[in-house]
Structure formats: structure tokens, C-alpha cells
Amino acid sequence: MTNNNKNSETVGSRRQSRQLALQFLYQLDVQKGRPIEMLDKFLAENTADLEIRKIARQWIRGTWNGLAHIDATIKEVSANWDINRISIVDRSNLRLAIYQLLDCPDVPAKVVINEAIELAKVFSTAQSSKFVNGVLDAVVKKMLNITEQTIDETETETEKQD
Image 1 (cartoon, rainbow, N blue to C red):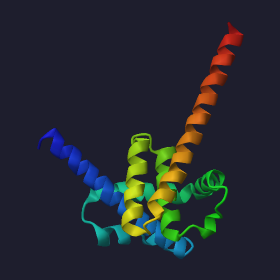
Image 2 (image 1 turned 180 degrees about the vertical axis):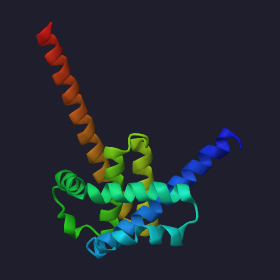
Image 3 (image 1 turned 45 degrees about the vertical axis):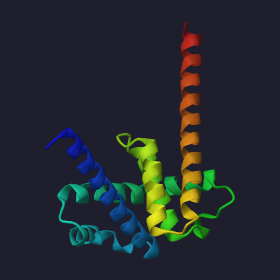
Image 4 (image 1 turned 90 degrees about the vertical axis):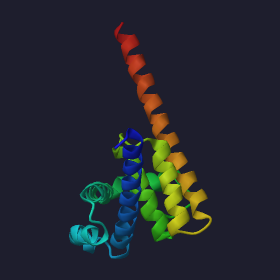
């Protein structure tokens, strides 16, 4: 197998993992978290690929476990939107993408945003991709601002010590 084939397989696996994660997060939201114990059964019914299951499981559990922080982030960057008024599909998509932005450093932010936009196009309305893009862009800007502040504070502390 060439390196190019391996990369395209990885992209395809991650895309399928994202789709499965979105679908299961949607179910969790609708059913208020009750079916989390059904995660392994859901994944087994939807793919035989163990790597896809592993990635999807990690993303679903990570998203669900970090829900309070993720939802607070959504509320912070979308001040004009009540999180409960965001469609369940879009809310699930945003939650997954924000989890990936915050906790999956191996996935570049640009990839996370592009994949979330594609999921919005497939699973939601025509306007959703723009909304998802706007929210995720604001999250990335917020993250960059925090990083820049941390760097500035570190540099200031270093200068004080000199």
C-alpha cells in the first residue's frame, strides 16, 4: 500500500467515524443520555471496521464527558443563540467539532471545521453549514486569543525574572 492510499484510508475512516459519532450524539441528545450503554452495539451494527469504532467511541465519549464545558463554549461564542434553540443535529455537530478542537491535537483545526461543515451539508439544512462555520471560527479565534494571552503572560513573567 502506498502512503497516498494509507492517507486516503485514514481520511475515509475518520470521516465515517465522525458520521457515526454525530449520529450517536444526536441520539444521546434526543434521549437525554440514556442510550450511552448502547454505544458498542450501535457501532457494531454500523461498521465492522474496528479502527472506525475505536475512533468514533473515543470522540463520542470525549464529547459526552466534556458536555458542560463544550456547551459553555458554544454559549460564549454564540451569544445571540440559546443553545436549546440550535437544532439537535447542529448542536451535536458543534459539540463533536468543539471537542475535537479542544481535546484532539492530532486533528488540525482546519480539518475539524471543514468536516463539520460537510456534516452540516449532509445531515442538516442549507443554512447550517454557514452557522456551523461561524461558531467554529469564533471558537478557534477564542482559542488563539487565549494562547496569545498565555504566551504574553509567560513572556512578561520571564522578563520580570531577568
